[in-house]
Length: 128
Image (cartoon, rainbow, N blue to C red; front, side, top):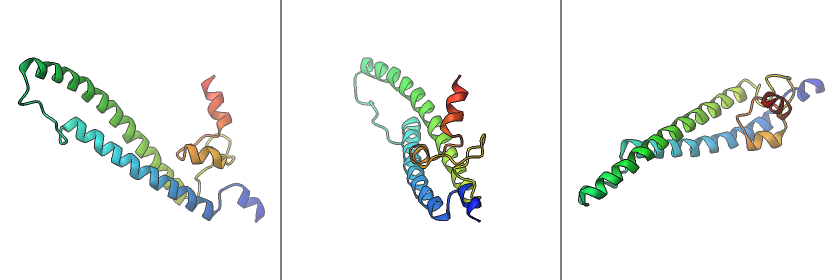
């Protein structure tokens, strides 16, 4: 039985990781909502009463920031999906297991990158 415990994190450890992920997920969703509001102008600071020249310059800047916000929103959505997938792995008790080596990913790495699915050795080798 002791051998089985070494191949996965305990339920207590999984609960600890779940709390970290839920916290990150809540913040990520808030950031995503903020980015979407920026894109759709629901939090609008419009320039209706300013000079036409300023308005043209402002619209140019708004287009750039809208594109940037769109890219950031896409990245944020992907991050949210990775965190949600990590929650599924916690429920399946497969969380924290490297998908290449089958070994446990160190707790230190998971606390920093809670959605990690590869141990650092595999991740480093993928870069080369």
